[in-house]
Image 1 (cartoon, one colour):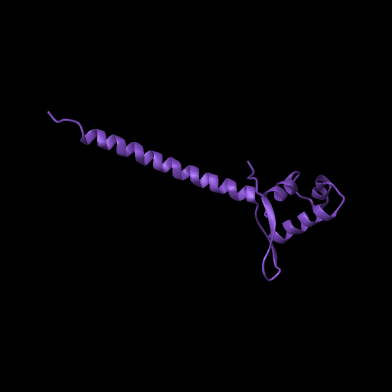
Image 2 (tube, rainbow, N blue to C red):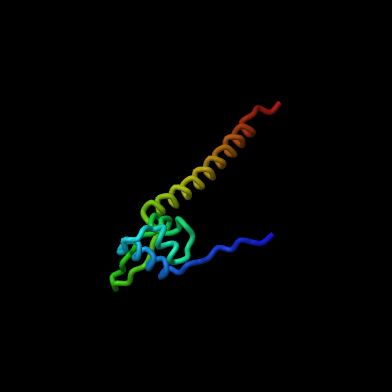
Length: 102
């Protein structure tokens, strides 16, 4: 069975593709065909990234606000699960030590 490998695109390629989507009258699907990228990938990039311009005028891609919020939610869910587990362990420990011996 052959392993599937995913192509990795550079940030510059993604920015150029997103700029082409903004400035061109072509559809995302047509641009994807022209660039030889997977169908739907351009739309995912548009939703996932936002352009960030530094003080020096350098433009780069950064996670969109939605993507950042999703990342924060996942982090908080992991923390909540950990704290909940710790609380359950402490409750059991208190129960064990508070039993009357005898």
